[in-house]
Image (tube, rainbow over the protein chains, first blue to last red):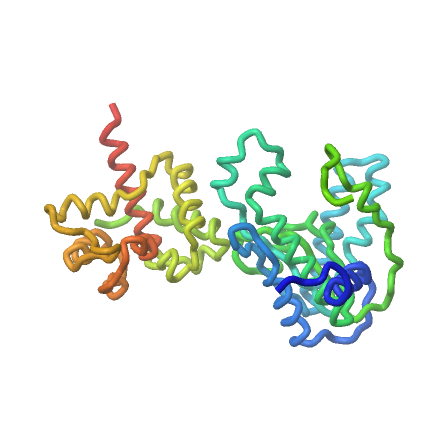
Length: 219
Length: 136
């Protein structure tokens, strides 16, 4: 069955896409197990090349573990900033504080990924790092799962945020999270009832995103 | 024949990394497809990994070729289904696979789904022995 090009489901989808915000401040209300299950249900239906479903998730609720994670991130951010020094070190300071925001969320979903296929790496001679990662397909697929999870959170009235900054402490975080050491950490997603409704940051017009030769598609 | 513990450990590590599972949960007797959930691309990835890890070149279809050779002219399969004699030879060729998994009606295309971690270990050891034999 084909969907209409506008109206109905498309409008509902676009409203969800446009209404989603990156929420970093949360009310102290708990997030139910059922809501977490719904988030993961949405995430697992994301597309993945060759259906590898490379995403894995770790759910953290305990204050003690979240605090240890935050401390690891703070330490890693300090070390990273000091290693570059100068203006970059100063400029990183406000970001480093943002990296720690997940600690206040009732639930943190850590998103992990299977390591890419060696076959893709072997076939990817002459490709850029980004192209090789895209050929393997795992990382883009995990991004799709994150998007689905974020949209599901928004649809449930929850706030969430895609956080990559904490990956500065990825080795420590993986140790705290547990699970197979053969998975890589891709993002932390704090989830909770939102205590803020941030303004929508600007988006480039679709026209500005088109590159290359002009096509002959619909005007 | 006892398996080289270092080979077993390395194969388990490659399997765990390829499939994104905990190495501690990978037993040598685990079926790659039936127990660990590998798909056909995962198996391809594993072959690449083992080739890199052990410096060997793995060719396709060696197990089937050995069985066909041992069949002495008898049919290996009929309409894609392994004959009873082929099943018996497959049990001998893959002693590490639980016998109940080598069942009547098994299709030749399904043989690869029987492979265990130990099948890979034996594959590696066979190649290494062959390679050593060719060394000057």
